Amino acid sequence: MKFSEILKELREDRQLKQKELAQKTGLSPQCISALENGSRTPTSQTLAALTRYFQVPSDYLLGLIDEFGNPIITQEEKSAGASATRRVSLTPIEDQMLYYFREIGKNNGEQGQDAALAVLETLANSKGGGKM
Image 1 (cartoon, one colour):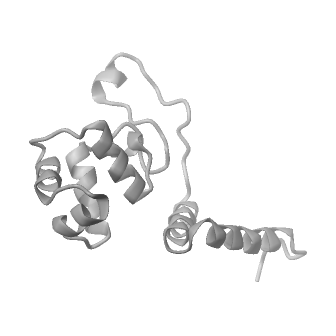
Image 2 (tube, rainbow, N blue to C red; image 1 turned 120 degrees about the vertical axis):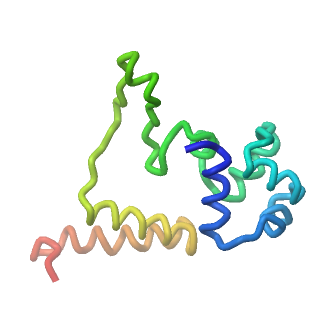
């Protein structure tokens, strides 16, 4: 995905209008619009403001890694023989758990994620093998 598409998706996921995102990041509404329509590329300061607000790595916003941190290999790189060294296949339930874990982080921060991990650890260490 392109930077413009990723930015728009992140904004829409949070149900923000361009003007609201501009206010929250200190950027102008015109800047947000130009970034989303692809007529402007982000400066380092703009990229920093957006990564801070969305709490995502700049490499994600730039389309270099996916939401799981895996490198995105372009068709040209594949043709040249490049391969991802850390590709991990997740089962559907693992993918769902990761999604909810990240939602906990967005809504409750690291403290909420620590609490979720404590529950999982308790289940994993229980005598029934975590079965409820």
